[in-house]
Length: 130
Image (cartoon, rainbow, N blue to C red; front, side, top):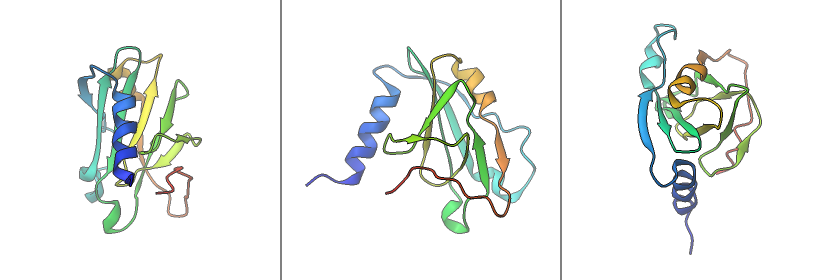
């Protein structure tokens, strides 16, 4: 019987491709100096024909998502299962999101994917029905 983890691992393998190369971490130097910022992670990869940023907030389970990531217009976002996310500002959760670009380098993507504190009343569709 298939398990959700198989679909998630398949989505990850598909977005990374055959020979991904780590380039740099997510650029968070302009994030507000707050207690939660240390729990935001992101890593950029060169995947041959596209760049990939994988990002998440490890603290989400301990009190809710407190940060959004901006998806640049040159990129598309997918949830952990590989389903498209339509919003350009999505909450970071413990579930990684994949941001892909066929135009930007991995280093540029790490800068263009800006992390911002979430307004208290914000709610976005992450497309994650898991």
